[in-house]
Length: 234
Figure 1 (cartoon, helix red, strand yellow):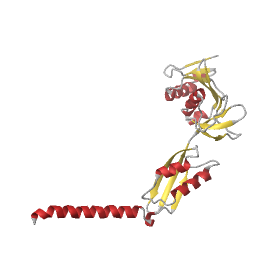
Figure 2 (cartoon, helix red, strand yellow):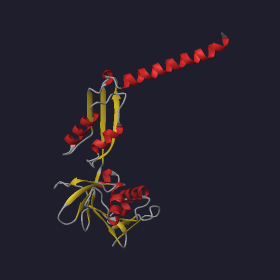
Figure 3 (cartoon, rainbow, N blue to C red):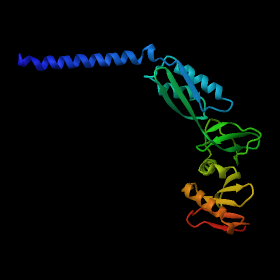
Figure 4 (cartoon, rainbow, N blue to C red):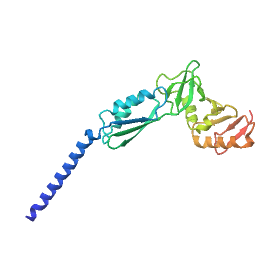
């Protein structure tokens, strides 16, 4: 009898485990936890309604125990403004989706058309006439959803690293042979960034020099070496 106890015990444990797994699988797809209250937040702009509708369609048939992130991301893939999704469940029937949008950093201009872009070069749509974002001139706008011009991408990466409060004071930026990326302020000196590396330190240096009364009247601030910034006249 002692010899039989171990196999019997193992069989009982296996039966219990199978029952638990079966119960979990049943509950996971049960109507008891079906998504009935879906909240979409964070979407803004002219495509906000379409983004919310796409997510609602994608979430149909899901449960709070079985959320398909791949399906939700695929639903918003046609909207470049969507950077990511943050999803949380409110057991048993609530689902909350926060849309994380790309932040606009510049307006790309080719002479006739203006489009807004994010820091990674993603085209976010036509720029409104009242846009206060800095402008970056290019010979031609991208044909797809991404900016591909290397010089323009270097400029955009510099603008994307700017403190957002300071970005409000930038009127334009461009890539030059003499000073690399040059950022023009509305009322202040030009900022010489050189290449697009070490941008956090460069913007910190630029902010510090701008805040120093000794830089008043300077025509430029060179932060191409952020640890030895220099201000001067043209």
